[in-house]
Image (tube, rainbow, N blue to C red):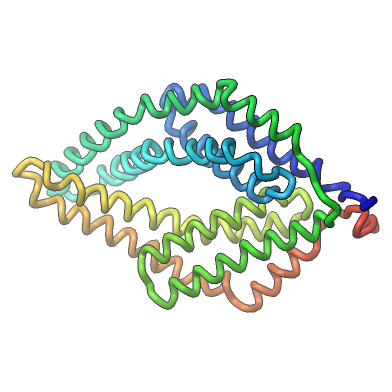
Length: 304
């Protein structure tokens, strides 16, 4: 009988249980409409989905309903989170904004806050779902049904990480060739997928992985700031038609300001990204993924 890997099952069980438990801990803040709690639950749902994807062989094909449920958490909290970010950005800038922009800012804040209030019921519904047996029971069945084959878990981890890293480089090259916003958005998503995959498997690596994640997050953050600015720009454009007559003429200028802010982050990313995607860094990344600090019976025990 082929011996199963001694790391695969405990790694999968721990990664899924920890992320699922943390998601439930956030139900109170989300139900109360707390902006940080909503953000944390949304990120936690992404991390849980990443773990489900990374341990797909152990999870098996029967987990689709639970995966869909976790995906719906991310989606359903998305609008509230976006509006919270937009309101915070406008409030932070309002004090230093030119006087001519003040009426447009006030109108935009009123509209965004009205939209945000309309999301309260959705946030409460998500929190209730996560706190219910509809969430707990499928998760319990999933954890009880975890199963692994005989493949080496560390080889599987390396394959997963290299796949994510390769996908990120591919999206980056496509963006370089087009410079389109839609392509850059895909680069941002690919960054997140690689980051979450690295976090899932970080337990098998040492300080080098922590350093790599730190570099990755710094580059990814530039795209996060770019995306926040462009979303605020697009929202301002959408609500311009409903603006009061005395404000409508300033709204395009307000949208243009946030478009310039988005461009500033875009340019910072363009300056920083080449070093992250250089051949030298790619070689280092591949070497890191191939050198876990732990060992399973396939690899033998690491020397102290």
